[in-house]
Amino acid sequence: MPRRPHSVSPPKSAADIQAGQGEKLHKALATAGAGSRREMETLITEGRVSVNGQLARVGDRVRPGDQVRVNGRLVRLQWRRQLPRVLLYHKPEGEIVSRDDPEGRANVFAGLPGVRGGRWVSVGRLDINTEGLLIFTTSGELANRLSHPRYQVEREYAVRILGSLTAEQRQALLTGVRLEDGPARLEGLVSAGGEGANQWYNVVILEGRNREVRRLFEHLGLTVSRLMRVRYGPIALPPRLKRGMREELTARDVAALMQWCGLEKPPPRKDTARKSRGGGGPDRRDTSRPPRDPAGGKTGHATRRRATSKGRGR
Image (cartoon, rainbow, N blue to C red; front, side, top):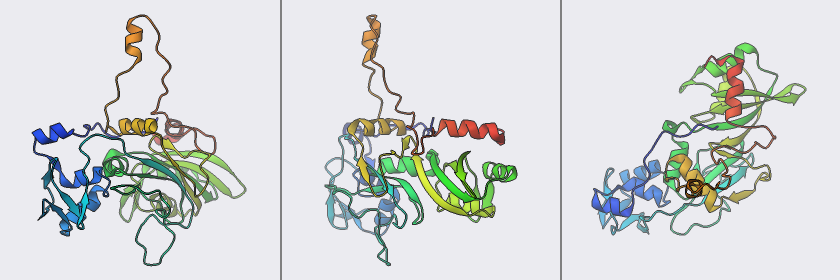
């Protein structure tokens, strides 16, 4: 089973906010889809956000009825709980995860469907030479829960290298090596076969630092010839989603993802009343269990279990 985020409190309702001290401005803007929390803090620091006509400061709070503008544009804050939109994209090689690029290269945001009163926020990044699952959402809060290192959400990649790993290299990747920006290691490592000199491995990381998987292998003198993200948290890349294709999650799947992240309380079980009267409720699908990966192998819990049996000592 994929690692779940730390226990968190669900978002406050409008009544809670009105009765208390309000909601933090950068968090309210992120929830409204104006961008990530970090981006909103930057805009506030740069003096590009106002509340009721006054320049905002980091740490300010807002309540229902406040007029908030970003770069002079009115942002409609969302005080009533409503589901965000979530989009899956199979990113091909050659596209960058950025809206602003002086070189004018192709970017993943081009062609995304329009969003009224907000914008798409990417959950994490993939470098230009990496393909695979990329998630977009209209909720900066959801993006934060999935991508911030403190929540330790698993990212699973299929990695093709020239040659095969020795026992010592496996142990080093799982125990940890020191990169230029600090120690790093794999959470899971499983052989996935290959042909000739090229061998595939499925690996799991928790942080998602810049080019982390590539740098881990390169630190040991190994050449990564192909890298593909096949799972992010509880979401696996659907086999039907070919390179360059997009697919929007249904409201039911978005609600399940929000619950997995701790942003929504699970609804009461409908079969509870039936069982109390002696009847059996309908079968319920375990939404925390990820589907199979594009290659047909199981992800998440199977990866860690098999990696543990190969000498991690955990």
